[in-house]
Length: 266
Length: 341
Image (tube, rainbow over all chains, first blue to last red; front, side, top):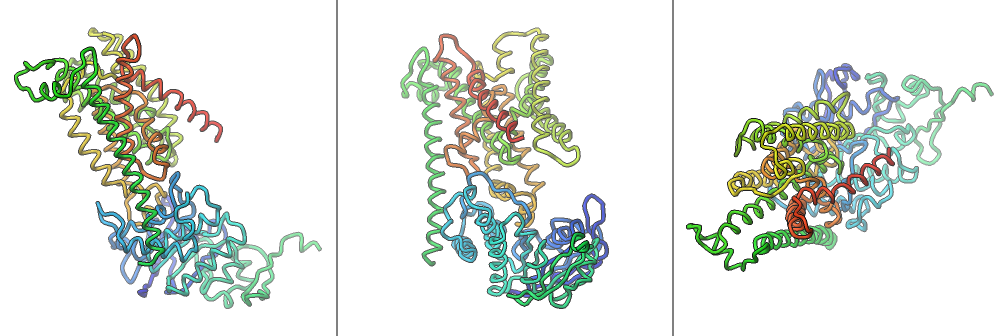
């Protein structure tokens, strides 16, 4: 794995001229698992999409190893930086291997079939995700958790040093959520892949992230290791909700107990 | 290589081989239907006689007129138009992720027809100028459709609804021009309403062949980009493709195919609409089915033309037969779309 530095400089970003992120300066820690936290509409996904060049910055820049993202040839960038979008589309009737093979697009030239290196990458992605046995199955027939593994395998087949994931656990049962997150952490430990993801569950973020970016209204409120920054005040600030922070009895990481209005009446 | 890599590779190769075999069978079927069109008719000619007549430059060989002037253009243009409609329809359907989004349903084909009818019947033109008018008009209609369905954010559903409306309007225009035209006669009318191979001339085949070969090769070369596009625009960009450029290129190529074929054979009803879904069924889905839907298109046109000529006591043009095939499938899709909401 090569070392890479992604950072934003005075980044302004948003949709259709509406600025959501204003003047953001962050550096993504290399080889770590980072999670972006924040309330709905605070600009988490916008930040992720801009860092993965799905959105053009309205101002400022996103730099990969000191060079602006837009200056890279698109296929070359696709070999360094991958992203799993929130709701990709499954082509009807496609098989698992064939779908995962799409991840090899940035390595393939016109008129060329799959090379042995391509098959090796696909097969490795399948085994990291533990879905070798599903290789020839129809993606339509898989469960939600299996399907999410297939999508992540596609992103892995891309063999990028940096992987962004936009809410990879949404719509999954709790058991699948944990499974997917553990697979991602394992991937990070094994291959030193830099992982950046948007998560909704603070406790899952606290447990699996090395580094947290806490955002509010398009601004960075705090960043650092979960233990250092997840406090009752910070949660109140970014979500507008009171809570109690205790220690996760199993993992020893911070654990958030939300406090609603009903609790106050007791 | 480890066993697992080999088994992944084997599964992938097996599916590709399966697809290649199906394409070969479809190609053979197309060729047999072409041979049948040349051999069979009021007079049945032997293959030797046919080869003789085609090779003959003096025009004196036995059956020269029937074979070279009547049957040969019909066969070649039927096959080419089938390829054009089949591939164009499949391109639209795969790109817009909806079986209803085929050029003959959303009015693009009718857009090309309107210009062709106007050029031939009102302006008295013929030949390649008519084809060019049809192409330009087809592209204009497509642009108008995309512009109208843009609204706040593009929606495939809106495109299809506006397209079905546009098609009804354009067909109305065609009927009106046919009624007003001085040269009004039934075969011409039928050609422009549902498509027909009656009286097509060999001169049209050359240009159509060039267009079909160029456009289909380009579409086939873009298939890998289309595969990535089908995962959604975000994934496509992440993988290093340029979704908007690929989309525009594929739509233009499909429009060229549709419009050129329409300007020669008329809008052979439902071929564009049916070929992709039939190819999907045959190959079990998951493939992009460009080549297979092209052959299915040819088979549909040739088989429908043969059935139209010989299966009934009256001769029907090919478009009437394909139209009858397409209608129930269209109803089925509309009902299903309605159920889904």
